[in-house]
Amino acid sequence: MRKGLFEELEKYGQSDFYPFHMPGHKRNAESGPLSAIYKCDITEIDGFDNLHQAQGIIKEAQEHAALLYQSDETYFLINGSTAGILSAVSSVAGRGRKLIAARNCHKAVYHAAFLNRLEMEYIYPDEIEDFGISAGISVKQVEDKIREIALREGIEDNRINSLIAGIILTSPTYDGILSDIKGIVKAAHSYGIPVIVDQAHGAHFGFHPDFPESAVAEGADLVIHSVHKTLPAPTQTALLHHNGSLVNGELIRKFLRIYQSSSPSYILMSGIDACMEIVEREGKEKLEKLISYRQELTKEAKKLKHIRIYPSMAEKQDGQENSVFWANGVQEPGRLLISVRGTELNGQQFYDILREKYHLQMEMCASDYVIAILSMMDRREGFERLSKALAEIDKTLGRSCGGILTEPAERNRKISLAYQQYRPKAELNISEAFTAEYDYIRMEEAEGRIAADFVNLYPPGIPILVPGEKMDDKVLQMTAAYLKDGYIVQGIEKYKPDDGYYVKVIKD
Image 1 (cartoon, rainbow, N blue to C red):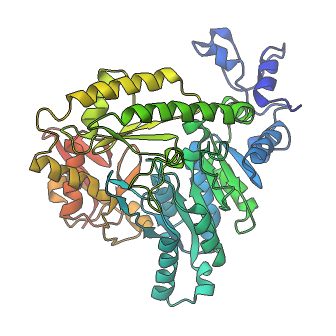
Image 2: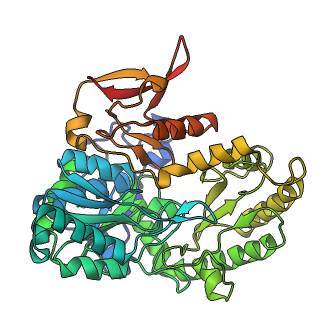
Image 3: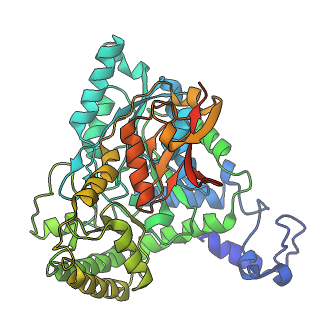
């Protein structure tokens, strides 16, 4: 039987070996309040392998993870999914100068494009109007984009892979919406183009029939999983899976050595390994419980008059059809989207009530909904408390204004949702703009200027503006609406003495 990394760390921590090596806490109980953790905190000493040239216990742990996910190769990430995305994009960058990306990708994708001087070619997801969220990406959208680029550049379809480095998509999205990864992979591979899937929020996929297949099983060349997001693993831990021969494995390893610390945390690596053991032994059973908890909650939610829950693929399989279920609107069961659209509450107010009155901390809020992340470690108690809170809040809605928003409120809501369909004009590529000289100016004076930095909502970290894109009245109104509603907008700074909002723009 394979000994896990944590077991070996624990054994070493209890031994009489004296540590004349890093880290400086020396596993000493006097090191402070974290001294219990320090017992297992070591560096690359004899018998414990090296993440950047794994040949022993770490290699075995990574191979075990690869076996679970049915991947050709799997690498531990201790700098989060960000390190995986940077490494994945960098590994394909030498294949061409353009990167096809869903516009709703995480900011790490844009950072990777900047570092590799790639030109971005965006696919814009459609909107699921009933809930005001982005749909998934379809095969047709990908094929249309490839043909559009080929026509514009005057290149034959069978040579387009010399221009397009790769395709990167996020599936599931922060809202839990899936893209047709299997179909997209088949289409992309027919052109010889590799597919990268940021599946940070889908590390639990493939371990229960009511959940989607992993993008690994669906044929993607590179897949990034944040095990800490939806599995029992420490924050900052993730996996990068490599499949097939379109992407050079040696390049991946080179870039992982660049983007990951040369002193990787053994606590984090052992956390990944221990997580894989839990998933293997108990994953299906725990996910079965999660499905039952969710179904009980959604059954009670059907009694509500104003609050709605977006139905997941598990509920659809149970025959609960809904008009929002269309080709690219399927949601995975590990994400709970709770909407107050059409009521007097906006998403931020709803979020605050759940947190302040009921001590239920949601993952994030948007214009008129909140998101809860579910995992196999959830307990029935949490779902019962949430169900009770939703019932109480629902009774208070629709009284003061009959559930109908005033015209200004409805206008602001539409403005704050508009970024999903907003298509700014790029005047410079990211690499040129991000390194250009810049000024800080008031937002009110920024119309017509070119962004020198990213402007994005956090969470989820999807850019509203990318460096090099022109600021028009629409994007400024959108950003102002987000700030007014209390959302965190990165890239916008508030300065005294005038307390105005300032943004970076490229110097004229």
